[in-house]
Amino acid sequence: MINLGGILIAALCVAGLVRGPKGNVRLVALLAGLAVAAAIGAKLWSAAERGGFAWHAPAWELTAGYRYPGAMVAVLVALPVLHRVFKPQAGMAQIFDAGVIGVCAGMVVVRLGCLWNGCCHGIETALPWATRYGVDTGAWHNHVRSGLISRNAEWSAYGHPLQLYFLVAVAAIGIFLLWFRGHRQTYGGQLALLFMALNGVSKGALESLRFSYTPSLQIYSFVMAGIGAAGLIYMARRNNQANCTSDLPLPN
Image 1 (cartoon, one colour):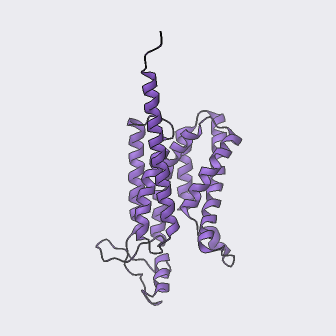
Image 2: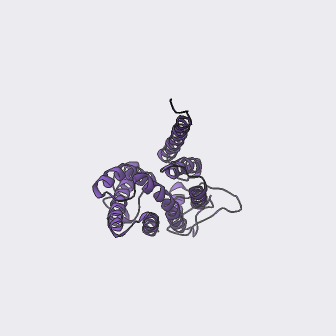
Image 3: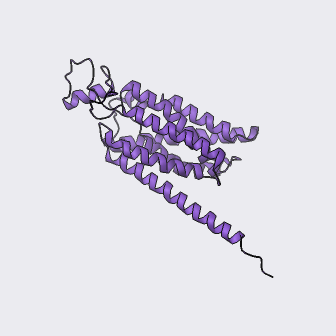
């Protein structure tokens, strides 16, 4: 699901940005570089949280143990460098705007994989929509280790379907950004800043429900929200100043 989500992100970026055969090659090369950077960043973030790599389990390390914040930070760092190397026809602001639309769609797919695998699950609850997971899922193992269930249990304990909360939040943000792009967008990069603000707030709030609560994930989310909000305020003021300047009477 992570791979499928990444492919969907790249496909939507290409569909929204390609301008001619030459642009195809350069843009695809740039996106491939971003995909590698995202994978490395996600793995390094995860390893930092865990205190190192699981060298004793290389198969698991290759197929699991990736963190979304690490991927986003890596993309933010790598895009300016790769943009100078490949020089695609699309500007960085355009790529960021198309990229966040793709991220919203891709993360819906990834969260479905989280739900199926039982990872990223929520704390226990007795709410009517509480979810439990089968043997050998991430939730089942976590509940065994924490003593909530025995090793003979066929199901995990009931908990918040946090994966679905994340899914609904990012899908709603993606739909809003699509609408905003067609009706309200006034400058390049505005969609990316909106995504950072909205996704940061929603993800940061939901992180409180994660069973394996990780403070760094919540802090990262709110920091991203703050950066996005600050960027929106700065650009709004700059645009207002530009409009005021353009309205001044010409000198005689």
